[in-house]
Length: 156
Image (cartoon, rainbow, N blue to C red; front, side, top):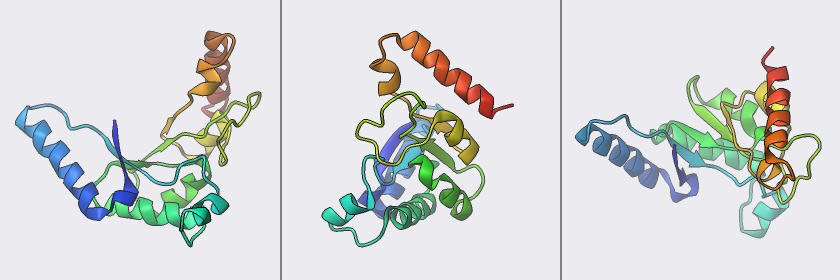
């Protein structure tokens, strides 16, 4: 998986998608899954306003996800809070990779739009990104196992 920033615009995303596919064909490999980063999970509506955006997070994510799809990307990176919105506007098969996933017994750190692993799976995430709750745990192996157990509960 590779990602580009959707705020780079349609022309940039289309060029990235075509370059990835063209190069993969030329060297006879499977093209990488190309994702567009929508709005960082560490940003709130107020943070977006501070940097000059005039729409709430959900509207920006919806607009950028639709643009990523129209540009030929395979999916997006988006908060678990916007998964259902993206599912309504993008077709089946459009991937959603979800950071901002935190186990119930950990802190949110700098993340502002978070759900638990189980909640993110219920919401429809294709892939979860979980870093610090494992990497900064006193026992990373146990932390990872707890996350897997939580996820398993969503899959039964």
